[in-house]
Structure formats: C-alpha cells, structure tokens
Image (cartoon, rainbow, N blue to C red):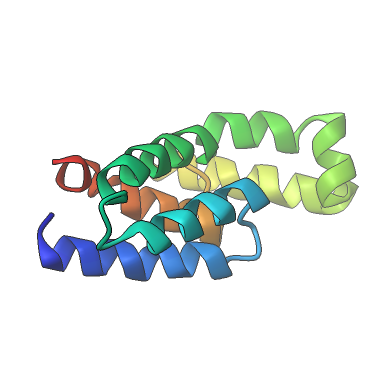
Length: 119
C-alpha cells in the first residue's frame, strides 16, 4: 500500500475512533486495523476493516427514514429528530450520499481510498 494512502487512512481512522458518533463495533475494528498495520495481519485486517466500514456507514435515505421514525425520536429526542431529518434532506439535495456526522464523514473518506487499501 502506498505510504501516503496509509498515512491518510491512519489519520482518518484515528478521527473515526475519536468521533462521538462512532459505534463500539466500528471503534474495535478500527483499533484492530491500526494494531495490524505493518504486521503480517495487515492485509487480512484491512479486508475486515473495509467490510465493517461498508456495513456501518449510514446512507442518507436511511438516516432520513430513521430520523422520521418513532425509534429516531427516541434516540435523538422528538425535536432533535426533526432537525436531523431536515438537515439530512438538505445535504441530500446537495448531493450527499451518506450521513455527515463525524463518524460517517471519516468512514466515507476512508472508503474513498478502498481500492488503494485493498491492492
């Protein structure tokens, strides 16, 4: 893997781990990948890491549907759920494919390097 790509993904992975919206499973996968960098397990863990990221990133339409649901109101609070849905619709109108919370933004940046990571 190209050193520049590796450094970029390591930086974004640290941002992901620090993101308050990052799930515990994703934090664990991120840390496992960081621990594997430079070892004989790096290629294997990179595949697992990418799979976890692809599974966890929130597509914008899913975010809108969740924010507008009863479950979304329970998670975000009724008023904030409306704000989340409104914001998600605004960024979708501007071309966003995914949620733009700190965790999803870091995941999207990492996945943009997927081909380089897996080669």
